[in-house]
Length: 467
Image (cartoon, rainbow, N blue to C red; front, side):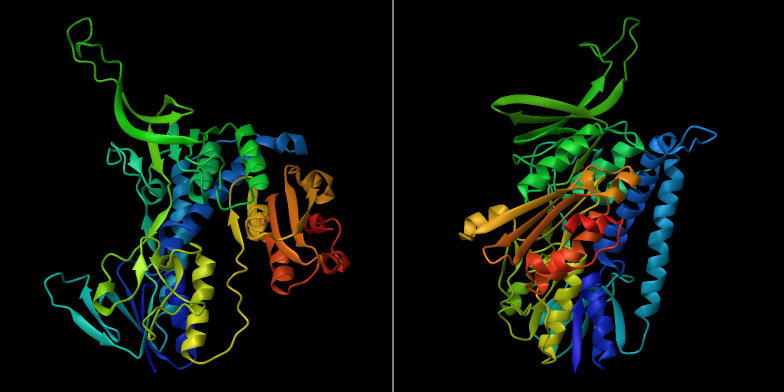
């Protein structure tokens, strides 16, 4: 069997490796660097920065633990950025080695559909050469997503960046304004606040993290605000303009010389009917991502899609039986681990393998300080579906390990149905991204609250939060 996979992000390369292991002849097509957004300009580089920020925060409170550094904690952004690049480079090398295994043909170029079994690829190295054509029994589209840009005046000004450019910035902005309080916006807000930026977050919705449980989102926002991050919620951005400080009305100083002044950006927004402004040196556009469908020529073969992405069924199959789509391109969970498991689901269906993968139970995490994590239904989901539910909460301030760590700010919230079956878990606090997997396992196994209570937990440990 021959398989073409368009896109070498987590959904693409993980599926390619598994398919080759199963004896499938795989052609993997990538228009940029293998690893996708996650490795090159998303999950991995941001988490490398998160670690630098975490160490900085620990140094600030070190004296409370009896640790007194000989010199005050300093921060070298250039070194932190170099470490981030080194981590990405090491993982790129490892991925390149894995993709060189027999059974996988890695093609560098931009792919588009010719028919439901054929794609044309324009090579990247030689723009003058013609397209090369590849055929397969099945095709999986995994081209991911690109940053969305808010269509407001000034969005194209110098200093207005997306997450891609901010990860490659060569300095710490003195003032950083972030438009959007989703996962991307909050992680950068947390990171650059630790690095020393004055951070302001402007968000259209009434609360941060629109897809998260509102109770958790509110408490996380309050926790981040204590660290000095300013939030303006329920706003509508009107535009971004340049401001040159120091200019007189005539544009000249008292001696007749031009005043150049310091250039900054002014973000105008409406809140509660009144226009307000925030000035910054750098503005991060973090208003989400959109599926990368533009160059695929999907109309040629009749694949159904809309602004949210390619439409698929529970097996990640499009309306064209031999064409599948996984990851961000489908517009669902825009998460690397979601793309990976969707790829397995698609491959299993192609090969007639039954699996127990439940893609509806999808944990998510936000790597702020403190972290937040979520899986399953929220209270809002239950209300909308008319589900009778109960909530139970526990707090990290009552957890011995959290107090020993000096990280007592946090809460865990469990949602169950009328029979005590676990429906959802939502938390913020230390290591929430790791702890959420216990709840994920119980929800996947359709277990009840009593099953969780009956499980023995190590003491003292953060996982006792579930007890």
